[in-house]
Image 1 (cartoon, helix red, strand yellow):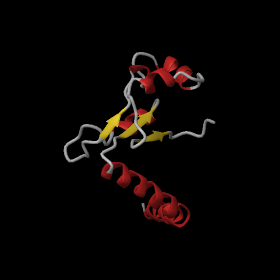
Image 2 (cartoon, rainbow, N blue to C red; image 1 turned 90 degrees about the vertical axis):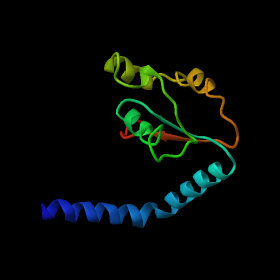
Image 3 (cartoon, rainbow, N blue to C red; image 1 turned 45 degrees about the horizontal axis):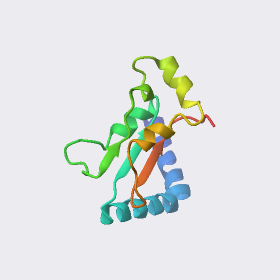
Image 4 (cartoon, rainbow, N blue to C red; image 1 turned 120 degrees about the horizontal axis):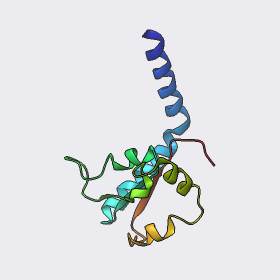
Length: 116
């Protein structure tokens, strides 16, 4: 178990060393969005869909968080269809259009894989 915790601490330290500036910039953008009465949209497909739901409609979460939900994004009704759709260029555009985003809004796109 000690090896696990050592690896975890090393990973967190690496994140802090290499990403703290970027995370601070993201925090400033999100804070400004809230101050400007904007919405923070979250979007994820497949397993990332679950992460996109984390801040949405939960006790204690910010009311300005709005998950972009579409049944085709998760594995219901078909994991194969969701996988194919996430790779289809332009598929997301009509879904985004339904949400009527404004310049004071921010979108967080969540991806937990290395598919490019």
